[in-house]
Amino acid sequence: MPFSEIAMYTIVFLALYVQVFFMVTFFERRKHLNKLHDEDLPVLTEFPTVAVIVPAWNEGTTVHGTIESLLNLDYPKDKLELIVVDDGSTDDTWQEMLRYKDHPQVRIFQKENGGKHTAVNFGIDNTKADFISCLDADSFVAPDALKRMINVFQKKPETMAVAPSLIVNKPKNILQYAQRVEYNMSTYNKRMLAYLGAIHVTPGPFSVYRKEVFQKIGKFRKAHNTEDQEIAYRMQEHHLKIDHCHTAYVFTSTPNTVKKLYKQRLRWIYGFINNTIDYRRLIFKTKYGNFSFFTLPSGIISIIAVCYLSFALLYNFILFIIKKITEISIKGFDLTFSPHFDLFFINTKTIFFISVILYSMVIFSIIVGTKLSKQSKAINWHIVPYLLIYSVIAPIWLLKAVWNTITKAGQPKWR
Image 1 (tube, rainbow, N blue to C red):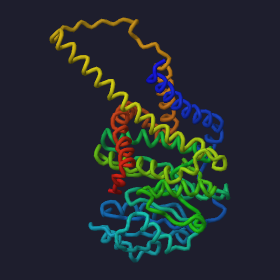
Image 2 (image 1 turned 90 degrees about the vertical axis):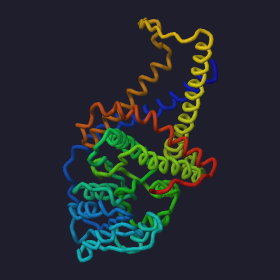
Image 3 (image 1 turned 135 degrees about the vertical axis):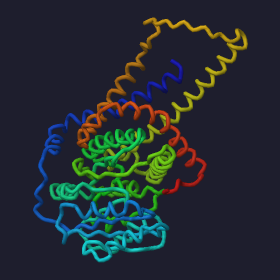
Image 4 (image 1 turned 180 degrees about the vertical axis):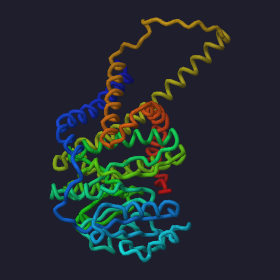
């Protein structure tokens, strides 16, 4: 068997293994998951103090809506404070924030630009709340989200951080609808990783932490402009449990152009690669559990697989072009076309059927994730553009992230 076939079988097998692993976890926990999904709004036995930090840089058009969504949270007003930090904006962000300067729940601050992590750390330094959350200034929170997340902490005292479900806010074009499919699938993946104790990122939009997390392991770091991922790695290293509340919904704005999406995902993948390099000491270490043996290796393998497949596709395409040029030079142009279908030409190799199974399982994860996100109406033809768009452009930002890491070309900017 040629090397190319061995490599292809290996890649597809590993991809299938990840999907099967998630599916087995899903069916093992299905009753518990259904119970969580159907339960009423929790009745909290106590209401700890919570500070929500909103770092804002040039968010003049969205910061007002973000603050209003937080003020509408179904949580006692005297237990919730909002700390909004203008990180050196050059637009009207500060003027928008001044609208809340006399609001009893809102505290506003202005500082020189230092990056998102410095703005969040500034907020941490200026609160005594028991729990701390962060919300990007272009995201909006469902009114019951905080209660549901605090309920997780009260049910599981060992939990140190809880991540919410992210939902694309008001998609307007095909690219954003494709992202909605991706985010819904991410809800499924994150829930399964939570069962495995293997979450690798606590998203910037509204993850909630016990304050002692920062007292034990320190505050946020720049971390290749992916501070929410690095702190999750650090928590896993110190055995601080991260959970996921799939019924806590946060609506986030997503890129509306291919260029903006490319820049965002380049930063995410670059961050994953370099945070994984920084924390390579955790890989295949028994004491770090599934995070060490499943999450990190599967991410690394995915990157290697995409790199290999991209170069293999390019190589085969070049060979095809050379072959066609040679044929034309010998035979000349032949414009005759006589379509003929023959069952003999249907691909019956094992790899074809395995690939069909793999794509079926991916669609299964999308459907389940969509239901978990209570976005049932989104189970439609948008799955098709998601598969097509991401199959074409995802390898580009991944290869660029790998190239930047190898050449030390510099980390992608936040904006």
